[in-house]
Amino acid sequence: MIVRLLLVAALVALLAGCGSSGHQAAPAPPKPTPKPKPAPSSKGPHGKLKVTILDGDRRVRVRGARVRLAGKSERTDRHGDTEFKAPRRRLDVFVSARGYSPTSVRLNFRHRKWQTIRIYQPDLQWPVYGATKARTQAPTDIRLRPPFRLIWSRGLGQLIEFPAVVWNGFAYIGNQRGTIHAISMRSGKVAWQHDTPGAPRMASSPAVDGEEVVYHTMAGHVYVLNRLNGHLKWSYNAGSAIESSPLVVHGIDYFGTAGGQIYALDLLRHKLRWSRSLGAKITSSAAIEHGRLFIGDYAGRLWALSPATGATRWIGTVNGKIYGTPAVAHGRVFVPSSTGNSLTAFTTSGRYLWRDTAGYYVYSSPAVAHGVVCFGSYDGWFYGASAASGRILWRIPTGGPISGAAVIVAGIAYVGSFSHRIIGVGVRSGRRVLTFPHGDYVPVSGNGMRLLLNGFSRIYAVEPRRSHRRRLAR
Image 1 (cartoon, rainbow, N blue to C red):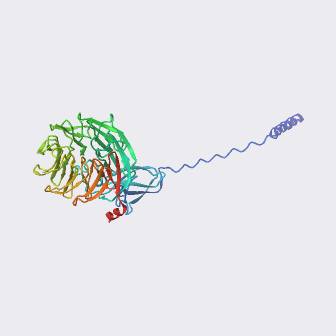
Image 2: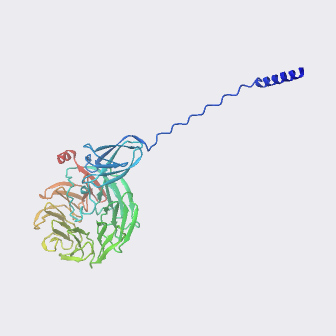
Image 3: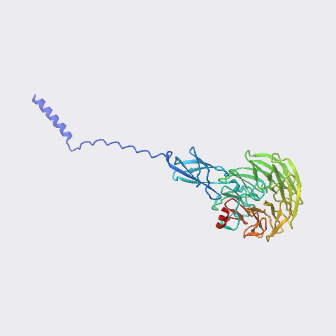
């Protein structure tokens, strides 16, 4: 019994020694770390997003524009603003407004809740050589007049024989070596540059068709570029030099070649709609009006064709080669003749009206507005004639031969000459109101914000002086 008690006591002592032999008691198990709260999702709503709609040319806010984003639609207020309760992330925004081209952009609202979108009026753009598909060289809605102030200039490295076209805030222009530039009308910065393979000579303006830029070269190629980045989309070989500037109507590019062919190239299907031989060299660009396509050739013939099939509607003749481009306005067609030293007028149905003769070649394509047709001659004189009768209303000396087209903007007729300057005169009065110290060929293009004056290898962006802009606004 005593032995058993001793064994029990020894066992108790042993267990007590194990629990107090210098070791600390085991720590309590740690509390579990709380899971971090998830960061707010960028897809969740974060208050209101604000969108302002601005006229990209006139630089005024657009009231009543329809703005759609994140499945919601609102109209802008009188300040051009609208607000949405929507996720702060990248969103596609669609804008439409009366008189403006529909616009779709993707905007990043993650770091900025207030975004501005510029939209543009088609009537304030200059998408083709000659400003309109009738090649009048006279946009009807651009109201910019001298006196001007210079905003920026940009050198293009080579001769500029034909002017820029302008669409939605960018000018697209080629130089003699076939390099196409996209230039911001606001800053003058080059957005992109496209170098034509082989650097062939280029003697025409490009054209804008939707999201594409189309241009022609003296190597006989048609090139179609992505308007946003200048990447080549596709090309077509016409086999003969092209001096016609593109005329794109309903996705069809109409142009003539040195081989005497006229083409209707379907830009959507990448194939010819039709072509035919006119039998003589063509440098003229095509004009379309009243359902007829007009183009001249070196045999001195003005062709009126069906745009749909190329079938002949009528043929008129002038007294020499037709180098320049006919202009169509108010039921009349005005046709320059280089070797005929003349400008001839027909009705759009083919009846001869009148002819004015200058002292030397008339390479210059005419401009028509306000009942006056303006043209230049190698004799160095700039002429203004009655569009109805052909009576010469005024003529102004320029100091050098005139090769490029005349242009009329807001009642001012412009012309460049080999005296290396541009002059502007009142289209009705013939009174000189502008002398610009740079110029050679076609003088002017632009948009509702600024005009582009063309020097030998540099373009100059100008706009009316502020006091004059205020008078125009009133």
